[in-house]
Length: 253
Image 1 (cartoon, rainbow, N blue to C red):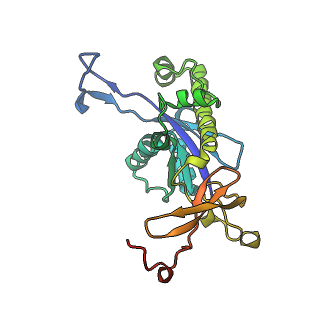
Image 2: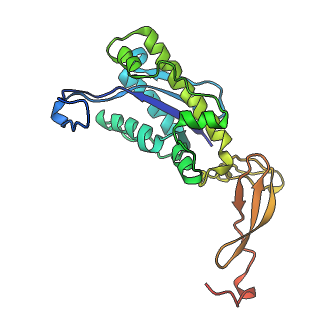
Image 3: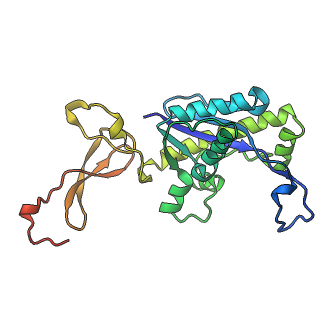
């Protein structure tokens, strides 16, 4: 399974507007639309963090780079990526008249966090701090940095943004690995393993064969073996029912 973690940075909109507070800005007042400035990405089985930017590579080459990675990926991991990052790059692909990359499954850690936990803040920065994981690079990560990159074309600012984007990917991947056993549903590793020694079961979340029966899991009318992975802690249900219909005539649906 090819798992890609990625993150993008975008430019702000440039517009004419009369007020600073609670202003509804019509599209006609927009001088320049927001666009992707750069991206960083990392394959789960590789150490290298890839990076491309509008200022180093040109806009089209940069977008071709992330299109190729998404087209190759089986699973894409990000933080708020389902609502923002993936849709933003898709918008750029459509603007250029490109076809969509081949379909991939998504693991959005923001949605998973909201689904399973009740932290006081769901911001990635705060979650990383609370869990003791590698922090984001927050120094100078403000509008002044974006202005220096977009309009100032300052090399130092571009380097800081590149470092910021790359670290976001590293931190996101670390967060993914940290909460892997909690992620549900997760794309099933078993579908990407052709065979295992002695027909061992495969953890759906991490692909480990260190998995054993933990107890039974019950649905409304059936019982199944429940497995637990010793590596990531995932619980998984067997596919074979332990309650054949002919032996359980008293069970009603």
